[in-house]
Structures are given as C-alpha cells and as structure tokens.
Amino acid sequence: MMIGPLVGSLLYSTSGNISLIHPSNITTGGNFGLPFFGAAGAEIVCLAGVMILLPRKYRKSRIEQGKNGDMTYVSVMDMMKKWRIILLVVVMSMSIASLTLLDPIFQPYASSSFNDTPLIIGLAFSGIVLVFSISSVVAGKIVEKTYAQVNVIVGLFLVSVAFALIGPLPWLPSLQTSTVSMIGLVLLAISLSFAIIPIPGEILLMGKGIKGGKGDVALAESSLTSAAYSAGAMIGPLLGSAVDDAAGFDWACLVAAAINFFLALLLLVMCSTRLLPWDVAKKKVKELERGRETRDIKLIKAEDAQERQRMENALYHESDPLLHSFTVNTQNLFSGDVENEVKI
Image 1 (cartoon, rainbow, N blue to C red):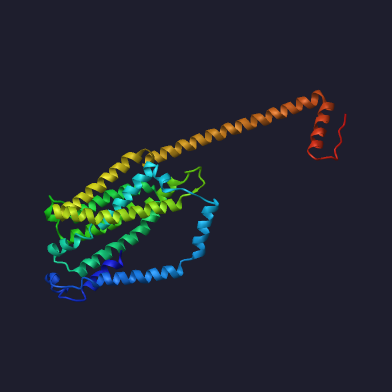
Image 2: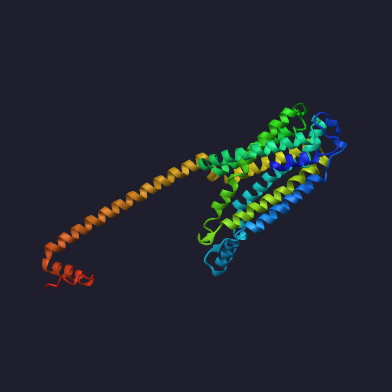
C-alpha cells in the first residue's frame, strides 16, 4: 500500500510529457501499461517464492491434525451467530472501504483543483500509508492499555472529521485548499489505524468460548478479517466513483463521512452498556465487592466447620475414650497403615 502508488506513478511518468515543472501536461502522455506489467511480473516472482519456501510439512500436519480430531476448529458460521462479531466485521469492511475510496477519485480531483502531477499524488498516497503504518504501532500500544472498542468508536468519529476536511463539505468551499486536504489525509490515516487495529483482537476474544471453549478460533478470525478486507477493498472504489460521477468529489467524501459517523453511533449505542469506561469501572467494582463477600463467607464457614469439628472431637474423646481409640486405629488400618493394630 505504501510502495504501490509511488512505484506506479514513477513507472507511469517514464514516458510522455509529464513533469513536475509543467503539471498541465498530465493529459498528454504517460506509459499507462508499464505499471500493470511491473505488478504482474512482481506477482509471478512472489508466486515462485511462495511455492519454493512454503513449508509443506506444516500444511500436511495441520490437515492430518484436523482429520484425526486432535483439534476442534470453530467455523465461520459459528462466529457469525454473534451479532457483535457481525458488527465488527462490517465496521472493519467500511474502514477499509474508507481507505480505498479515494483511489479512483482523488487523482482527478487533485489534478483539476490543485494542478498536482501523478508523481506528487503518488508521493502523497505513500506518505499517507507511511503515517498509517506508524500510527498503527502506536494504536496497538494504546489498545493494550485501554478499551479496544472505545478506540474503534473514537477512530470512526475522527474518520468522519477527516473526510469533512478532504472534501471539503459542500457548504464549506473556503476549505478547498491543498493544505486542508493534506491535513485531512493525515488525520484519515491516523484515525483509521485506531478504527481497524483493535478489531481482529476483539473478534478473536469474542469467538472464544464457542463449542465449550475447545475450539481453535484463529482460522475463523483470519477468514473473517480477510473477507472484511476484501469486501472493503471492493466497496470503496465502487462507492467513491459512483458518487463522484453523480454528484462530485465533495459529496463522495460527505457520504463516506456519514457512513463512518453512523457506524460510530451504532457501535456506541449497541455496546455502551459494557464498553464505556465508567460502566466498566462500576462493573469491576461490583465484581470485586461480590468476590470479597464470597471470600468472607467461605472463611466464616471454614472457621465454623473447624471449630465445630474440634468441639465434636473433644466431646467424643471425653465421653468414650475406648470407642475413640477403636475408631482411630480402624481408620489407620483401612488407609494402609497396617502397623497400627486395632485395640478393643
């Protein structure tokens, strides 16, 4: 995602009259087929490398393990029975769609509005993906110490703000500048990292416990996240190009902002009872209080039982010491201590 736009723009600019000095010449030429030929050659090289380096023993052992029943696999349909997982898959798909929505429409918009060349636009996209990569690491560290789905909600709200700046909004034409668009793109990359990164881990956690907790959820989680990524990669360009042709670039960004804002509200409403920090804190306090009460009751019962046993032993020994000696030695005999003899 970071190398593709940069390499594609460089290969496209290898012929024709495209230059950084005269950006108005972008319609006069360019080697349109060379980026595709280069991508096809790279795919063939990667395919050969995968066929050579992929460990066959690992694949064979996993298949035999599944056939022998040594490991139970949770199916995708079992995961899809939980509405929270479905909601997170939809959110991830639309987040990826927000990332790919600008692919077919931003270059014509930037060329006509700011006179940017394909090389500059390619550098911009590469910079956005670089920011996304760095912010993803930061988002992962933050998610480990906070509530994951709260980060998703905040990320979706920020995505809406980012699209409002990129467009900009149809009723704010004064914001249509290159600087505002770049700020919106950087904010989009940062906010999408917070919206996407926590989702696979949340799906994995929600999938645990299916089939009595004995199932392997990793394969189903990987399938769902891959499907969400593929669906988003397809929906984004289709949605962006369709709205751009019908109403323009600013309305395409407005639609994307509205979708992300709606998903953020939906996720907030449906999950607020257990995700908001104050609700989670109250729940933890109640659980701690309940645990302390249970522990205290157990301690009281244990002390009462020990005291009662001591009293019974004392009364029993004082009332009939001969019978007490017989009982103790009989217990020792049946427990394997044959050296003790039964005394009557």
